[in-house]
Image 1: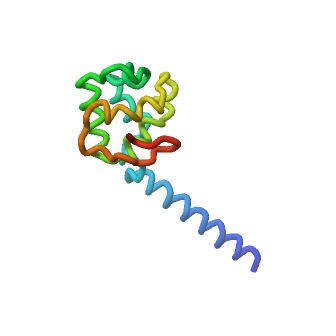
Image 2: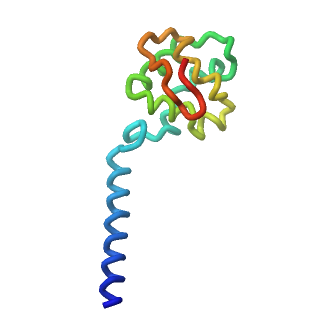
Image 3: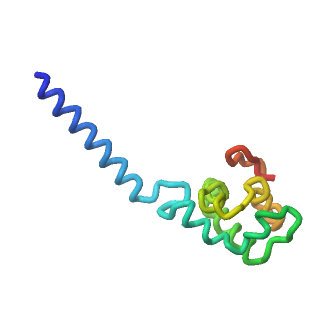
Amino acid sequence: MAVIRGVIVVAILVMVAVAALVRGADGAGECGATSPDKMALKLAPCASAAKDPKSTPSSGCCTAVRTIGKQSPKCLCAVMLSNTTRSSGIKPEVAITIPKRCNIADRPVGYKCGDYTLP
């Protein structure tokens, strides 16, 4: 009887693992099939604007932020807090202000992004 229970437990664990892999493969993350770290590369034009709150974001930066933000506020948040962004010296508290500095009218004002709130 114990052997049968052990086999059932193993079978359940295998099904859970397979379900997790399938879910990850179908793009269930914040940015769909693309990881936030990979998506962060699209924000390269925002490098200076994400480090200096007084700098004016370039049009390329604003276009990238607008595009990612339209995909999903969750994606934009995940990108701004990603390992790629942080390791490149980006300050999340400054990056979070870029949509406002780009005058993106339909930005999700008040959206909670980790410890930060979108202005």
